[in-house]
Amino acid sequence: MIIERFVLTPFQQNTRVVACEETRRAICIDPGEESEDLFEFISKNELDLQAIALTHGHLDHVGGTAHLSRKFPEAEIILHKDDADLYYGLPQQPLFFGMEPHQLAALGLEYEDPPRLTRNWEDGESYEVGTLRFSVRHCPGHTRGHVVLAEENEKKVFVGDCLFDGSIGRTDLPGGSYEQLIDSINSKILSLADDFVVYSGHGPETTVGREKTHNPFLNQASRSSGGRYV
Ligand SMILES: [Fe+2]
View 1: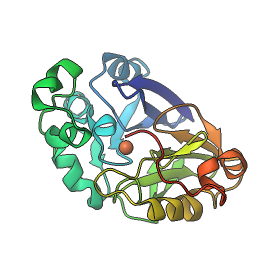
View 2: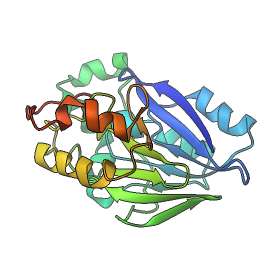
View 3: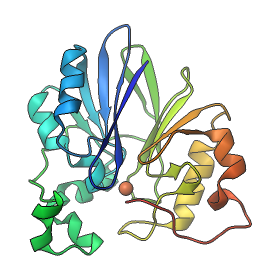
């Protein structure tokens, strides 16, 4: 299994290319912004990009979709239907974060309308990338339509902005719910084996076991809402 990370956007978002070593089939999970490094990695390694796989619809996770889709027009673009409004509203999203329209270009947050989604994730479906098989798990709470992708043979889970090393996703943005997020994390992520490696949308990798024992947001003693990252 090939996993290559690109840290993109002013939000330090983790864009990843995940590929099957045998077949060279690949997906890009959450292209945060236009990136020549990302494009060149896929091209130079002769990977066959079958999909732009979006965990959720926030700007720092979908901002590079239009560019990547132009480079690889055969790639599917997949997102859960409950985040479709967020995705299609990409040009307006910076306003949620309190940014003024005149500031956007200077911050690199001026977006074109994104390309049409070609498919929606379904909770519980199995999604194949060569010999890799991801189980798709709907995890609302950070956004309504957030999903995580778990590869159970490789014991790796791509969790977007649900869970971070020592923290959890923000729940104060439109569609967020603290109770739903905690329930999603417990039922859909922490139910995986302790040795699953957790790949988050921001920050370093962690494991299911480490978050179960060390994450203060998942400890019953700490019920304060908040979390980090957009
Ligand atoms: Fe997010």
